[in-house]
Image 1 (tube, rainbow, N blue to C red):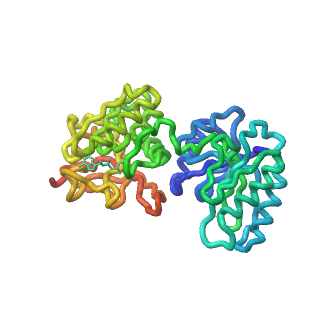
Image 2 (image 1 turned 45 degrees about the vertical axis):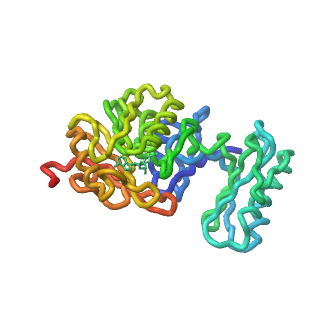
Image 3 (image 1 turned 120 degrees about the vertical axis):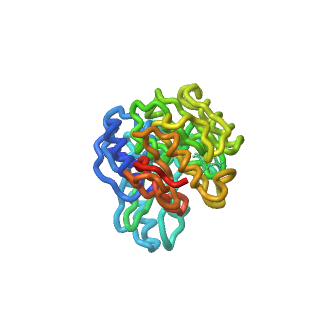
Length: 346
Ligand SMILES: C[S@@+](CC[C@H](N)C(=O)[O-])C[C@H]1O[C@@H](n2cnc3c(N)ncnc32)[C@H](O)[C@@H]1O
């Protein structure tokens, strides 16, 4: 049944997901849509290694003509009944369904889930676990997804036992921590190749650097933050990662006074503090000017900065590439920056 795989992604980074699929030879990309990359998976491809995607699903049915009226529920149930389940050997402990759609409709997500789930469970001869009233299905249930965009619904089976964005290494967190696939997209844009030193001067729980390590296994990774609790989280997460944390150096420091030598850093990956959720503190409390001046100082002449910015391009940098993303109802930009030639006012 699984002709197509669908990588679900944060809106804005779909083209980066498509590039990762091609580069990693995971399959042949057949289409890029809003929050989805459709591809034909190569035989034996390790789909679960995809870092820029939120989730990978195996497409079971696409249903058109899903309107706002309640007749949509019957259409979806019929489509679920027609799903070819013969190739599904690992059937898990029952069936669970999670549905999502945008906008107002005359039915709820739970009604979709139950309509589709009951049919799939019947076909698979397994119990169905509804999510109504906050019920939690067993962890090892087969996880089906129904996503409706406009008039088109996709019924699909999750390839992994958890969404890909839920990284095994992320055992500790902080407020405002970065969504790992977005950090992976930043690492991809940073063209890490064989770089020597990568820095995050506001590293929080360490997500950018841990994601960078996957594409730059030999790099020295330096993470600083004003908040000691953030650094404890970062170092716990790095220890749970690929090399047990050996390549990382963490330290408490103000982003307005980064404790590294001028011109010694090849790449800076950063999502600086902003807004009320993670307010800038110390030398950055008034504005982020001191951070950007320090980033300019420590960056090598041919270095690159990849920053998630909410307030435009910082002074003293030239924009190479910009990718606008949708994150928790906001639309920041992943900016790829080079140092602008010439002196910058202090
Ligand atoms: C948006 S969060 C970074 C999240 C991080 N990328 C992650 O994945 O967890 C911003 C971070 O900036 C830190 N911060 C605030 N003021 C700072 C300063 N003056 N110098 C360095 N870090 C600062 C906060 O403690 C917070 O961890």
